[in-house]
Figure 1 (cartoon, rainbow, N blue to C red):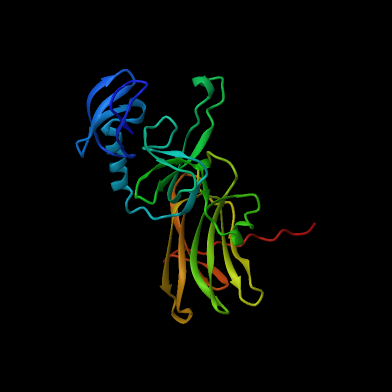
Figure 2: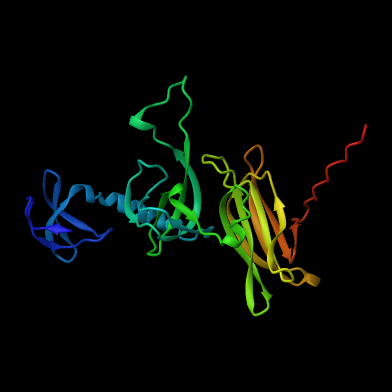
Length: 290
């Protein structure tokens, strides 16, 4: 809102929206006198105005990440700010209202601020870490939001099988026909239910739909992964099997090197697709009974 004067009693002379560009003409204590692109002049509180540099940073981020694949959908729990980088102290411009649906693109971690600005010393434990999501809102604004402010939007039919783990993302692999309806089959990523882990997910599960029993069943599960986003989906022709859904995940080894693993789903069977020259993993040997 723009007011005609800096006083307890004032008149409203105009309205500005989140993200509008303003020219600063004057200042008085806690207020700026500004002019909008439409030529309307008035006073606005300084705390509601940010430097153009912050706006430009978000525009640069949007251009850099415009081709980043969507990794899931989420809904904001409360009103929350969109920051230019992960971290509560990072500059912010846009505000998401509670219940806003957003696209989830990337995960990152940042140090959590200690109460009262306390600092850690060499004899004190390191600051705890918080998870952040790079998101895109319905208006196309992009930036970083504190992860705990977002609920990952996952169908209840499969969310109930999380078994206490944190659901990171879910993907529709394909659909099967059950009577007169099409039922999606899912890939789901899960992690321990805590922030600050050095990987994005530690487990994958594939849920297929049993058309005889009319329910979801776990077709594939893999644990102990150091998975990193993004996950990519597609379809490939496998000769006699025909065109099948495929997905690729990226995992880190103990040295931090990232490699890709591809899987195919021929409902209800999910199998690893080996790259040319790649050797299948050897099964663990059986222990002899003493």
